[in-house]
Amino acid sequence: MTAVTLSRAGPVDLTVPAPPSKSLTHRALVAAALAQGRSQIQDPLLSDDTRLTCEGLSRLGVRIRCRDGSFVVEGDGVLPASGEVLDLGNSGTSLRLLASVAALGRSPVMLTGSARMQERPVGPLGDALARLGARVRYAARPGCPPIEVTGPLRGGSVSVDGSVSSQFVSSLMLAGPLTPKGIEVRVDGTPVSRSYLDLTVQVMARFGAVVEREGYRRFLAPPGGYSGTAYRVEGDWSSASYLFALAAVLGGRVTVPNLDPASAQGDRRFAEALAAMGCRVTSGPSGVTVARDGRLGGIEVDMSSAPDTVQTLAVVAVSAESPTRITGIGHLRFKESDRLAVTADRLRHLGAGATVENDALVITPAPLHGGVVDPVDDHRTAMAFAVLGLAAGNVTIADPGCVAKSWPGFWDVLGEAGLL
Image (cartoon, rainbow, N blue to C red; front, top):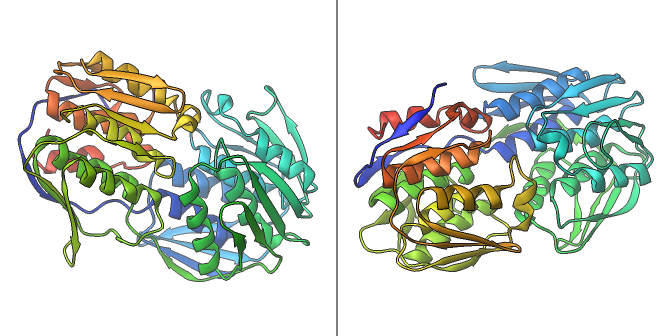
């Protein structure tokens, strides 16, 4: 897809459904793959990332097919033995979740990905798998992919650093019910992205696995396996943030009809942040609505449990009348790009003030001008700066096709809304 140039837009009045949750689709695919019996995952997200999870599970011997927009997964409660190389591209979720899945088998499995993936840390997960019985080898840089794991994973108790990624803990939890001893994970440090652990527990319960927990410090997934089931994926609050941001920066209102206001998704906090800045947020039978007809004020907010909406909040903050400080987000350095550095750099490039302070991002509003934004193959950077481009005008997003990682139809939605 060629570059997209955005013109300045006026107030909006839109009703647009969000795509299905990427996080829940990944987790449901893994639980279904490990379950006994047939599972149907209804309304899943069909994107590059979830395709990579499907392909990885298929290479491990799991039978998955897509039928009428649903995934049908045939499980027998065990992971077939299979030595494979899984190239998981730029999907960190796929690689981390499947590392523990692969360790359930008896053959070596190499998990690798893009150049950026090979810079992203996986060491705490690898160390945990080794302590739980697997053999772990790094093919190049210690603590980063490519990582080879060889099972079988016996289970037991292990401590994991939770300050880099919650996915290390989720990966171990998902594998726990298929190990002889189960897996107890004790989380060291200050756990980030805690809401994603809630999502993991929620999905496991839907597939019949019991998880005992003590807050976010201890999780126990005892042996017992999963049962095949029908699971419907709810709308994605992360993707909805770009829709709500349109109302916040352009004025007007946007309604998203397929969101659960009580969802365990942490990115639901984004709407609360918009309300604190001066937007009106309501929910009802028609969906969740964000509206703005006045001015925005800057805020200080901890977004450690809503990391995927930090960039969206940053571009909204540019339209406020006072600075915004977003805290608790140091772990964004280890995403598809260094989102702290990239976001600050691109905001400054378009005229706004932005500085990184340890685990915080500070945005100072200033007059914007046009420019070219390179998202460095990061889908969330591309979508967030598309919203800002509609406020500033004459902003070009290079490599717009990278949004296929989580929302292949993003540009179509903007076009159908008359914003392209």
